[in-house]
Length: 204
Image 1 (tube, rainbow, N blue to C red):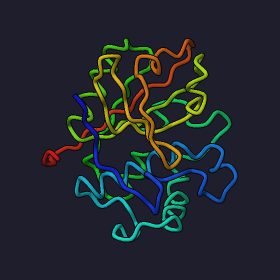
Image 2: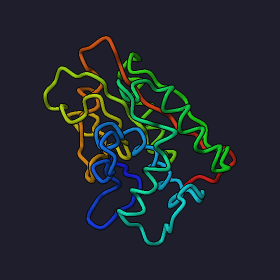
Image 3: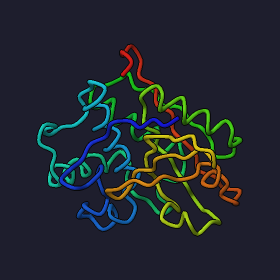
């Protein structure tokens, strides 16, 4: 079984890109803010909310860059980055509160939990129409070097004979990753998932 959520494009970019940000620290450590920006655009375009302060009918790199600057105070890069799930949740909740949107709730799903639970959580979130903000800290497998100390979205899954694969969205592109391998980082310090829930809203 395979399921993918609708997303958005800006030119030939699948989703946003932190490389577009002009501030050096945002280029280096703006992945948490970028994940929140992409989530906001998803909720605006596909769930009927109003979380994007520019023209959603005419998406551009310029406006996305401006959006990142607005998100920065809530999820500002720091020495270790946005390295805990609660930092992302607190920051994005503050943005939502200031935007007048109180229906989006978030819960932590720690990376220390078993893989089978992570697989079920991702499947349930995607089935319910929610992208999944994901944090990877360290990882022993060099195949995931682009995801080390990084926030990104999962917006699809594919149950194959050789495993459960997730669609990871980052840096203007997407890639199908084996979730079991991604989840098994080999380090004690873990990242994890943020689980969205939208109260009093119709199903997608």
